Each structure stands twice: as structure tokens, then as C-alpha cells.
Image 1 (tube, rainbow, N blue to C red):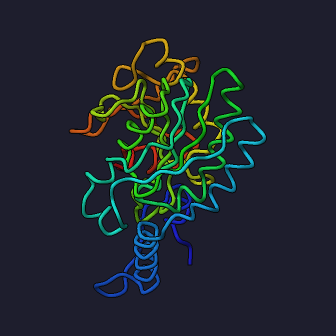
Image 2 (cartoon, one colour; image 1 turned 120 degrees about the vertical axis):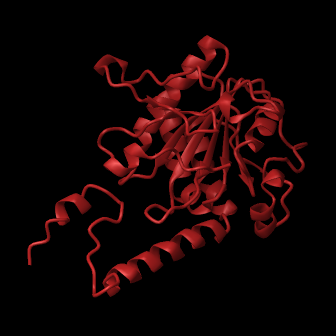
Length: 280
């Protein structure tokens, strides 16, 4: 039987044209929903393999001449406390082991609400970023942060003494994507910064979401823009597609004040239309 919805389903991760069985959904669609819900819950609760991630970063550090990865954690003592107390995920534990590098850039790799996303994508994104920056900046050793939310990067960036911090963090899982990574950029990081002071590149999860190279290109443009303006946030726009006349910057969700970069046109339509998943 010809399914007229099939071409549309191929273009989006959204659940459309599910069909019916009497007054309910077909069993297949119900089971697919339950599997997606279970994957999202697992992505939130699965712990980050810090040792494995540090091993991946070690190889990148050797190849690109950046320092050995460092480790920190927030004040949240457990995953349960992290989920119940978002404020503790934004506050640092002991940062005394972080050197004051006076570097131009710092990378914070935060588990966020999807440690799975960090495991899957962080090393690839870091390598793409280093390739894109091409040795133009002094870069601090990468920092792996556990039980972390976005604002923890402000404390880490200040401790490292960097001009700009990029926080790579697992975004809140949804029913279509459980391993999406976000990149949050803050120029002159310091405790007390708000979402209005950041820029977000969201939905990094190839092959269905944004690829590493395009995410790195946007990040490089935003870093250059922040250094020129002297600040990041709502006044800073992504100009990587200015030559084509297609504006990539989109309005922040109501109440967040964030400036975000919209996914490229090759992404599914559902990904283009939705705001960045919250990671903080």
C-alpha cells in the first residue's frame, strides 16, 4: 500500500502521519514512542565516562599542542541532586587546580542534561574548532566539567583567565534526538553573566543535525565578532552566511534573551523551526 506520508517523514524527525488502529495509534508507533522516551531518560541519567573522554582529548591535545585536559565538577554531589538543584550545577566545586592561563580561548566540556551527547560529539567538535581557528589564538587546556550547567563555564573561564569561553554541553534530550550538543559562547566570562550575554550554536549531532565543520565555522565567526565588539550576546550576530543574503541569526525564545544560530538549510525542517534545546 502506497504511504503518502513516507516522503515527508524522510525530511523530518518529527512524528507525523502516524496512522491509526481503531481509536488508537498502531502498536508500532506506540512502541517507537516508548523507545524514544526511554532513550531520552537514559541520556539524562547515564553518567559521563570522564576517563574515556579525557583519553580522546589527550590525543587531540598532543596533535594540536594544547594543554592536557583538566577535570572539575559542580557543587552538585550526585546526578539526582544535579537534577533537583539546577543552582548547584551552575556553581563550581574546587577550581584551585585550574591555571590562570591568560589565553584567548577556553573550552569547557560539560555533561549537561545529555552526557551521551558529549561522549558522542565533543572530541569531533573540539578537533573541528581547533582546525577552524588555525592557530590564530592562544588556547587554554580543555576542562571537563561534570554535573555541570552552562553558567559553570563563567566560573571556569574566569579561573582560567581566558578572554572567551566556549562551553560544549549536552542539550536536554527530546523524543527525536537524545544526543544533541550545544556550544555556548561567552566573551569576558565572569560569575553573574546571564543568557543575554551568550550566543548559542545548537543541534550539533551529525548526520541528522548540524555537522562539526559548520558548527566550528559559526563559532569562529562569533569569536572574531565578540573580540571586535568587546562583548557577546544578543548584539552579536552570526555573519557566516552574509554573502548569500540568508540570515542565520534567529530570535531567542521568549524570556531567555539568548542569541542563537539557526541550523543550516540542509537540516530537517523541524530542526530549523524550533529554538535551541535548553541545556542550563
